[in-house]
Image 1 (cartoon, helix red, strand yellow):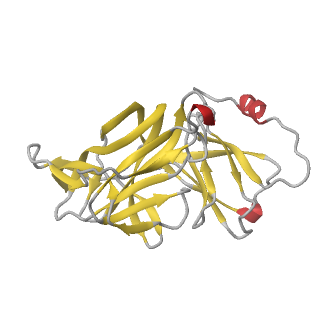
Image 2 (cartoon, rainbow, N blue to C red):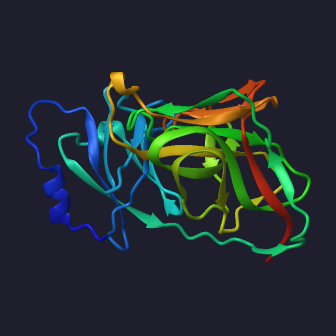
Image 3 (tube, helix red, strand yellow):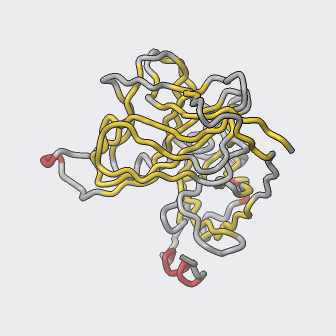
Length: 287
């Protein structure tokens, strides 16, 4: 749905008095002018940030940010934009336009469609990790470090085991990252967002990967990011907050956790790690 400027201004209309510590606005595509839902907004290296909502509208509290901090707005398949906090006018509403990035990738040739290569944790236990509440967990992510495989592979499907989904439905995003020091960089072969809506249920969830997500002899992090949830609010007498939890496998490894998109990497070695695995096929690349 195309978002007109006057609609945006109407949504943002408010009286602003005194000093404002919120960076707020809307993210949209520079070519189509369409709003971009669930864009990541965060201070680089810090646990300060948020994501835009379904209409591309965002608000980020910068009360704990420093003037020299860099705020990054990013979206898979688009060139990120950066702002120095000291140069932001926090008394205005920003319209941030992101430009699709041009990525030249090698052609992918599948070597074998018969032999499935499984990477990650295919087991589960009674332990679990996850979230509750509707909005406070938006933009948080849980994931697993996938060890390097000895040949390049293409990801066909991602699986994760739900311990519980009490919401009527939950929207998550699948992200693939490479570790770059204390920061993460998106996997170059992921050119689009991978969204998955999950209804109230338990058990294994399969996410089909339709694009050519390639792991080339390197360690990668696969993460499940909480975006949104829908259900009728309930009181503490009715059971309190709903939960969305992912099972943990009794396999030691590196558990990835993130509160905001630009914070320093949080990889912790643990005896129990998320029940997440990839089904892949061997490939070769050619120019």
